Length: 259
Ligand code: KIV
Image 1: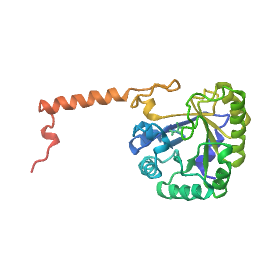
Image 2: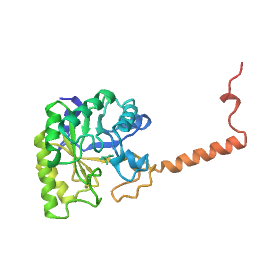
Image 3: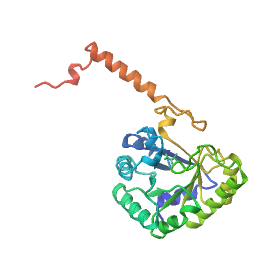
């Protein structure tokens, strides 16, 4: 088993798992010092490209961003988020997963769904592709983005799907926006770690979109905590630069070349 995956599994019931998204090297290089897992999320569709849905994100775009992310990753587990329509059947999923691993050198892939994709998950794992599951809100296929686990039927389905994914061999499951008590139930009833986003502190780990956390995006989502306002910091720097250029304070002789 991949050593980085083993380390994540060993954290269950011992210490929380720290995860964030990255779309490029300059960010992944910083995250790598502090995160157990770095996810190249297809959320880049909305965060970077203003897409209304992640459905429009292509495998090629994900591969290009992941190649950049990989340049900054040494110690964290790097996970590639398989975009919509790239794992519709076992053959397609394995072909694309192999391509992704070959081109990006990521450690694992993430797929959205439970029972509906269970044969695909099993097939990938049988073929030695490490898989991270994803339940709760499924941005690639859901129409409504409200939290999950309001109804008993929904709760039972998520619990059943988590157990099916565990049995299929995924090493961990992302739980996106599920109800607090349900997050505890799922985390208590499976042996692999759960990684929550908007799913309370009852999960074994947490993940957020880095651009939200550092204040580069305009996210106003309830579950996001903004730890910095980078947009403001960048704007201050750009304004200073503009003022220096206009007033000829930049560049100075030390920034110029002379024979
Ligand atoms: O695409 C993504 O960034 C994700 C996280 C929100 C878990 O799937």
